[in-house]
Image (cartoon, rainbow, N blue to C red; front, side, top):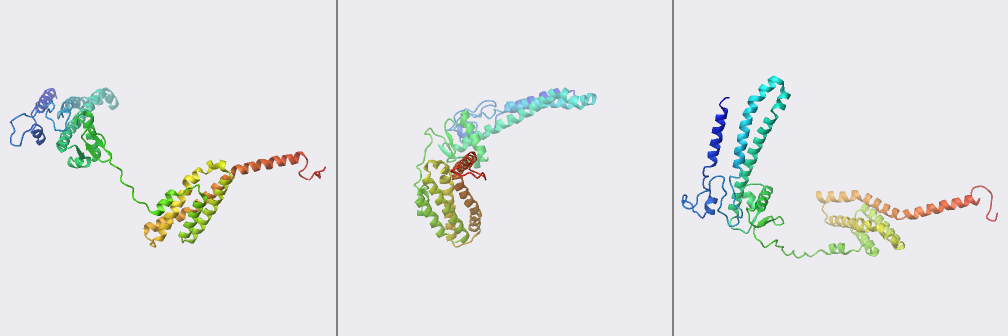
Length: 358
């Protein structure tokens, strides 16, 4: 154990010497430097460790530094080795003398530095890996002005989410001089023309039934009631027909109330804008499925779903009609209460025997 500092110094010198060696040439390096295979040693060489690559791809901005995380990794190894040895040698001795908890307290700075060294190793390794990915992205992109993000992800290979994060980092850090990620098309755009919008496709012709559904005015009581009657005629199921009859009856009464009390139109806003048109839409879908004459699994389950909810729909329509008379009911209750009090005050109620001429 007395010679561990010597071993640590030798390890540090070896790591430093290895980091300064020239890295093997990569096809990407040769293409950036204008070299062809077989011409190694002619022209520019790979820069020493710790220096950024000055050769650039056609779309590259800021040079990629492959050694950006190597220094952090080396110092992390130094910290981890030094404090790991100190922890291994010192913790058992302190624990035997003063207990495990006291040993944790005494050795906590050593533990912290050891953990910090491990964290530096991890961070430096990740930086180096990211720099290597950046170089490979540049090689794959080449001279293209746009490329599919999915294609890049498959060629790396990484997930599409990882590729998006990497490419955005390259744009933010200036490794890619200009461009943006167009997530609407899933492509990396490397030009300064800005977002290009495609002309919207021409709308497809709608069926007549869909046009009628879209243009049906929910405030036109005659048109709505006629649509309900038509749906009742189109649907053959007897139980459904009875419930549609009830829906049509209640809807007619609601429209009649609206005509008599136009100042209370706000009470019907939700009913006319959502509940009534949605109910008609569901009944039209039921009628279309019934017309198919096929009881497949999907059609049968959808029809059963609609049939099961019709009781709730009828109940909801009835409650909507009842709520319209809530204010009237309160006014009537108030009038009845006042009348009863007046009768009692004038002795005209109960068995007092008084008469109106009394």
